[in-house]
Length: 301
Ligand code: G3I
Image (cartoon, rainbow, N blue to C red; front, side, top):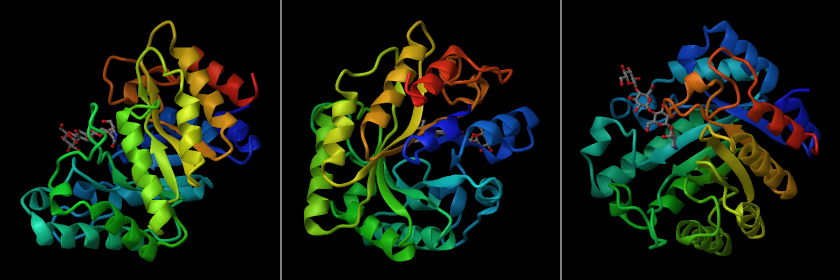
């Protein structure tokens, strides 16, 4: 009957949306959110620039608007994102070395502690791998503090909120390729050394098609002993949009450790992909063909 209810009937999965605090006064938006979704991800409100605009000065007003709405509706919350090379506050962009490392780990500890007990899954580290064929890390100020920055972040997050699932999240990982294999190797290494990681997020910002080995790629990560989550799904508008949404949904359902799917916005007009109409509802809030194909897939069609 709805995306969230149908996903819940499929092994207790969630179906979520990225939402913006600034849209919670929009009644069309909120009615779709409350009807269809049982999980939310703050689109920007938990990022480093939003939560620690000055060093050591934490602000959670907008994040809490989302958290309070979600908790009031019984929705899960995906926290996004504790550390990322983008959307850092200016003061952090100006740091390096051990000063930046200490500030970053303190940020993880403070934010994860503040929201302790409320977050289903945290994107602890976002987009740390390079695009292209290297399979290696992306260069960033965080990476330049030492290759162990990712595991340090996961250990700090675990200590701060032991009940949250801790995820690594990235894009262009929608099949078996050099980038996804680099991440796969990191996760395998973390599992072998006891670094606390519970899940891998596949953003899934897709064009007109999806890789034929999308499901197989999810499965190889699941076989390492982590959950997988589709975390930022959106698909270019076009003749194949509804099919791509259905294919991704079926892939998640076919992988027992795929915990749920999040779309990156509610209406096309809410999307970061301006003009691409990549979401499940049109600008007026009407269900699109992609909505119907997704719901049918959730219901076994
Ligand atoms: O809040 C300011 C506002 O005060 C200002 O007037 C306005 C002027 O441009 O900018 C506003 O900030 C914007 C923010 O979204 C909130 O709307 C930023 O400029 C804009 O860059 C930011 O874009 C976000 C983007 O991440 C930043 O990298 C998108 O909304 C958000 O959808 C997007 O999400 C990312 C995920 O976090 C990670 N994966 C990729 C995904 C898409 O890029």
